[in-house]
Structures are given as C-alpha cells and as structure tokens.
Image 1 (cartoon, helix red, strand yellow):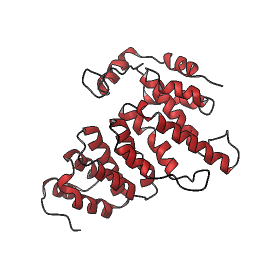
Image 2 (cartoon, rainbow, N blue to C red):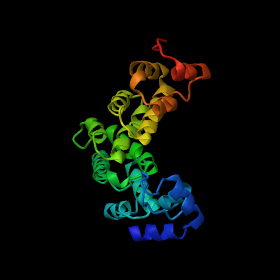
Image 3 (cartoon, rainbow, N blue to C red):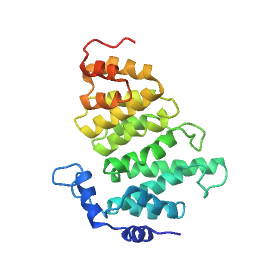
Image 4 (tube, helix red, strand yellow):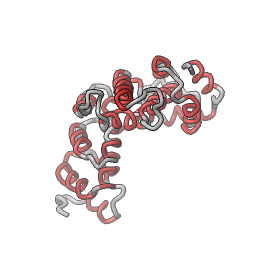
Length: 257
C-alpha cells in the first residue's frame, strides 16, 4: 500500500523554486485571480505523471482523498490522476468480473463528483473529468442502466466555476464516441456565462465536435452565433480554413452550407 504521505514525499523530492514562480503566474494565483492562494511545489506535469505511474492502483481511496485536500496543487493533481487510473478498465486490477468492475468504476466516479470542487483550477479539471465523469457516462452501472446524463446539467447549474467547467469538459469523452448532443446542450446552457475559462472550454469542446463533424459545428454556430462569446467562437473555428474563419469572425449572415 502507498499512502498520501508517500506520494507527497515523492513530490517533495522534485520541488523546484524557479518553476514554482512560473506556475504561480501561469495559474493566476495572485490576489483576486481565479487561482488566488494556491500553493505549488514547482513540478511539471510529466514529472507528476511519473509519480502517478509508480503509485497507480496501490493507493487506497481514502488516501487518494487526502491528496485531493492537500494544499499543494501537484498533490491534488496526483490524487485526480490516480482516480483516472482507477477508471481505466484495462488497468483496474482490484475487482474481478464485469459486475465488480462496473461497481468499482461507479464508486470512483461518484467519489470524484463528491469532491469535484477540489479540482480548483483548469488543469485539474481538464486532466481528470473526461477520464472519470466522461468515461462513467459511457459505462453501464451495476444494475445495467446507463448513468444519467443530466448530472452534466446539474454541474452546469452549479455556482462553482470548476464544477461548471467539469460539466462541459467531461463531454470530451462523449465527443470521442461521436455523441455530440450533450456537448451542444451544455454549451447552450453556458452561453451567458461571464467567465473566460468557461468561454474557452466551451469553444474547445465545439472545436472537438467540428473535428469529427464539421456540419454539426456549422449548424450550431449558425443557430447560436449572436449569443456565442467571441472567445468561444475563436476557439471553435480554429481548425477551419482561413476563409471560413474570416466568415465567422466578420460575417453577419447565417451560414447555410
């Protein structure tokens, strides 16, 4: 068994003062910024992933929870990445049999949702929710039914910025399976959101839809053009050719192609 203290001790050996300052600026930890007060050891993500690789499937759930509540950003990231590892069916070694595997993944996903607000910066959200919430929504529960997709609507309706970002970014796993309806629904729910981090995430997910079905993206932009934040639009059209990007950025007639 590996404990939270063991994981944090491994992280401490990688502490980097210079990198800490870089990360504190990058993740907006100053007064009044979205990451205000967060503490960093100064560890790059590949280094954190290496610690996770050594510890995966050896850290009990209660110890992972301790990591999620660590004051250190990188320790929280470790905790969330360990939960992602627990969700991977080809690496989930603890349960035996399909029913046990389904129950285990259901437990992990619901645990994540209970502690979702500990993913309190965009990297913690983006590196965890598609592999946990998204994968859970694609997997039958122990009783054979599919998890309710309206959990995404509940998250989108939260007053917490990070739960709202989880709502839209979790749909990346669904997009990869060519299931677009939930992404488009949640994107529409978040159209009037005031925060740039939601605008960016929404545009990113719309772009991912467009990579797989450009017609669906065009139809969505045409229907919601007037209400779509400019940042979301820019992110959504990044993969289009220059002429079409120019059309969406500067045109006023609805796209009909």
